[in-house]
Amino acid sequence: MNVLIIGCGKVGSRLADILCQFGHDVSIIALKRESFDLLSDDFSGFTIQGVPIDLDILRQAGIEGCDAIAAVTEDDNTNIMVCQIAREIFNVPKIIARIFDPLREDIFSRFDIQSVCPTNITVSSVYAMLTNRTQTRHITVGNEVMSVSTMKAPHEVWGKTVAEAARYLQPESLIAIVDETGEITMAVDILLNPSTQRTISSSDKLLVSTDIR
Image (tube, rainbow, N blue to C red):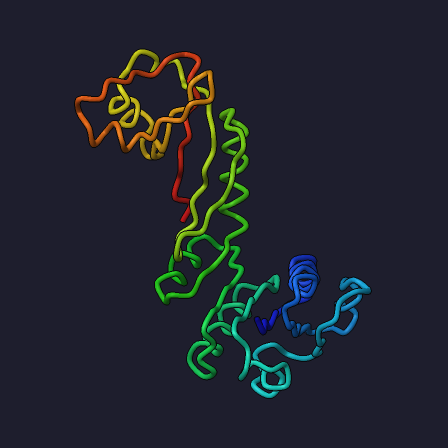
């Protein structure tokens, strides 16, 4: 895959190094030449210094032949502008942006451009820790990002049916119940089959998801 990265900070440089390690063709643009010092000695891609929204700089970096672009500078406006240029002028097939402002991320997702919001992800992770969630993961499905975590069954749902527990946990979605032996029961199987009997016990763990858009 031919990937163009915009921004060579901690995220951009790390992403560039990983993509190169896996055999992808990588070009990376940075405003300042010293930013490239963050790249590892094994980086085998191309570095281009210049203003990321300059069409000539983007062409020099190979945007016309790239398969994907990742705009991960520290500035939301720059990332948004680069992605709009990539979409409207160069028809890049896959476009991803880092957006710090959650409100902007919500608007941006409507343009069918994938985005990652560190603010939302941090809030979700800290919330999970504060509420004793474990094994928190973030999963991208289309343009949506979900936080998936495991939690001990709260005492308020002990003895309740799966349907009652699912209602109590809203706005989180109950995905599955894991009993003390490690057996997993999918919540949807029980909810769609009224004849199935299952109540929540104090030893159960619950797998829940939250939309963090």
